[in-house]
Amino acid sequence: MIQAAAALISDQGAAEASARAIAAAAEVAPSAINYNFGNIERLLSSAFARGAEQTAQWMEARTVEIAALPRTADGAARALEHVIIAWTTDERSLALLYQEALNVGAGAEPCAGWTRQWRDFWISAAGLFGLSEIDGRLLHLTFESEALYHLSTWSPGLERAVLRDLTDHVGAVYLGAPHRIDSGALPTALTAAGSPSSTSIPPAAMRIAIAAAQIVETSGFSGLTQRAVASKAGVTTGSVTHHFRTIEDLVTGAIRGQVQMLTDAATLADGPALEPITLERMFQGIARHVLDDPPASPLRRRLFLAAVRRPDLAGAGAIIRFSHGGTTRDMLAQIGLAGGPLALHSGLISRFASALWFACSADEAPRVSRERLFDAIAERSVRALRIATHSQA
Image (cartoon, rainbow, N blue to C red):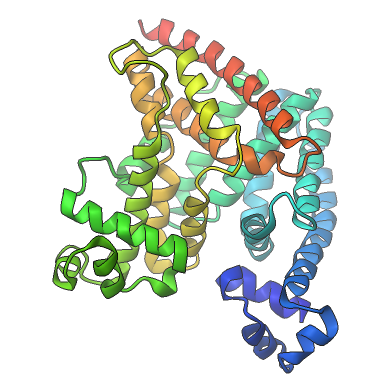
C-alpha cells in the first residue's frame, strides 16, 4: 500500500491519491488502509517517509560523485548543476514525490525531515568545496527552486542551458566563483515560452483566465470546466469558448491568469510610485512578501506540477517557469541594468524569493532562518548589481 500510494502521488499528484484509488492500485480493499494505518493521512505520511529513506541512500552516491570536482566555488556550482539534473531525470518519480510532500506538509513531519536532509546535504557539500554554512544554505535554496522547475520537459536542450547559466550565476554572484559569459539561454527561453505581460491578453480574456485560476486553486483541474469558469467570471459560456476553445486552452489560460494575479499583487517598492527606485527599496519590498507565513505562490507550484505531468501542457508549464522575475526585471531596468544580466539577476532573485519559505520550513526557527538567508541574498545581490549597472553606465 505504501508503494502504491507513493507511485500514485508521483504519477498523478497527492490530490488524486484517494483511499479508493490507492486500494485499487494495491489490489486491496479500501478498509485495509484504515486497518493497517488508521487513516489515509498516515498512509501518505508513510509514503513520504519511505521517499526520504530512499533519498538518503541516493545522496550517499551523489556525495562520492561531487567529491571528484575541484574544491572551489566553481566546483560547487558544477555540483549543484549535476545533482539537480540527476535528481530530476534519474530519480524523477522520487523528485515528484518530494514536491508533493512539500505541497501537502512542508514544515511538518515527515516532510520536514526530508527537507532537512537536503539542507544538511548542501551544507556538507559547501564544506567540501571550502565554502561557509550560509553558502550551503544558498546552494540548498537554489536546489529547492530548480529541483521543482527542472522537472519540466518542454525544451530539454534549452532548459538545460538555462540551468547551466543559472548555476554559473549562483556561483559567480553568491559564492565567489569566476564570472562566466552566459549563453543567453534564459532570454531565449523567455521569448520562446511566451511569458505573458499585462497587455498580452485582452482584458475580457484575462478576467476569464483569472477566474479559471481561482477555480483550480479551490477545486483542482477536475473542477475546471467552461461552464464553471463562465459562472465564476460572470460571463456566458459562449464568451469562454470564444477566447478558450478547448479545455487545454483553458488550462493554459488559468496559468496565465495565475501569473497575472501574482504580477498584480507584487508591489515591491515602498513610497510613492514616482519616487525613484533604488536597490535597497526593491529588496525591502521583496522582503515584505517572502519573510512572513504562509509560503508565497502555492498555486504556482501546484499548477506547474500538474502541467509537467501532461505533455500537452508542457508549454503552459514553461510559462510558469519562465514568468519568474517580471516585476523585478522591470525595476532593475529602471535602475539601469539591461541585456542578458538583467534576465539572470531578476530571474534568480524571484526564484530565491519563491523557494525561501520551503528551504527554511524544517528549521527550528524558520522566520529567523528566512531573515538571515534573505539578508545574505540582498547583500550579495546589491553588490553584484551595483557592479553590473556601473559597467553598463
